[in-house]
Image: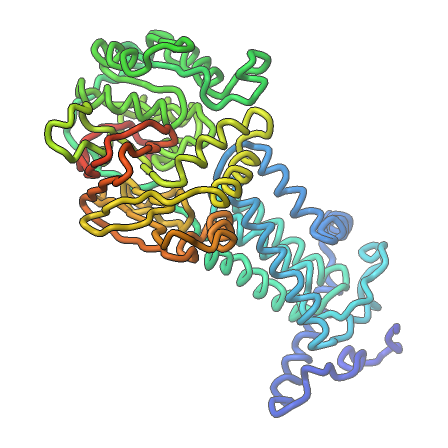
Length: 526
């Protein structure tokens, strides 16, 4: 395949299949330009990269470089990086067969002749598959685009630079023409962006109303801060048995080091959580909470009752509210406190709808409230998670619950319904699952109501698939609407209600509503 001395580079290969047809003249000119660009790159000498680029190209074979990077991002325990790694991997899974099964077989373009490429760059066996489009370039662009949709620029930029280097290396080592690489990059980028069709990208921070002009006592050493720590939040099985520290305990240790004058209150097993928060808020200038969403829920009640700002320090497993604020680590929470940036967020509630019911007052929630089969799902998950871990337990619980659950007979805003799943969000959520997890705003004044209501019998397999796939709107009988309030009357008596992941009995007649921008919270810089 070596070129005859003095032969023009345009004579090296036969006309590719894609150059035939009504636009043959245009494609022929593009082909000549493509080969000319290849010759220029082949003749280039880049000191220091003669060894680096071939090795980089080789490391990307079969996606090894990208899947290794995805594993590294997953081990960081940072949700945005984990989502970026997963989205990038999904994009590769889409782009790779499009390029290798469809594209290469459709165009069947021959590989370049490498007589102008120095042997030092092609020490490994050149590929024998068709050239157009470039699979390595497609995978690189797909992964980089997926990561860029989720991860911060400090991570997305190096990944994008590496992807560009891999794409250039495919030409530099003689494996592809520039046109092959450009086509692969385009397909990969489309695959990455296309993941948003089935999995919308979430904003890194939900917007909140800035608390302009509100006084807050901020000190360098944390004087005036009372932090309540729930050590049972966010722990693995080993953590709960005292073998390894849970994430709440790690966060509490950082608070002690960074804010030495702050008062740290550690909850004891069986202690009255609401009473502990009320006592802490009564003597605090700033009430801090270290724990998961259920613990933050109790802290919000105390902060509202005593009119003190709330500092949310993530220390749970999911930490939905903290992440919505943009606080993904205890260090970010401490930085937000020291900067003194306050915002105001909505607080939703479920209150007894029947006058004189004698069932206490409002039951607050910052994220979501649910009834129907979701409460059974939570109960099953809690029973299974010590043996299986939280995520596998959640999947198993979803399948079992939707196989055996019965609907709740309820009157919803005056309409009688058989309710299988009901979700009420504090604010409008952007994802489609049974329990969506992200919002664009925390101060929009609206409730996001999603409900699956069907007859006494429902296609269980279809419902299970819709829940596990995160597309509840595909379930039979699905309805969704936005409202300022909602009234529910359970005809069978007592209603079980899950608020921010905690399940408890509720009166049969409840009214959902909102306190707009009622809670002051510390927020990171947007």
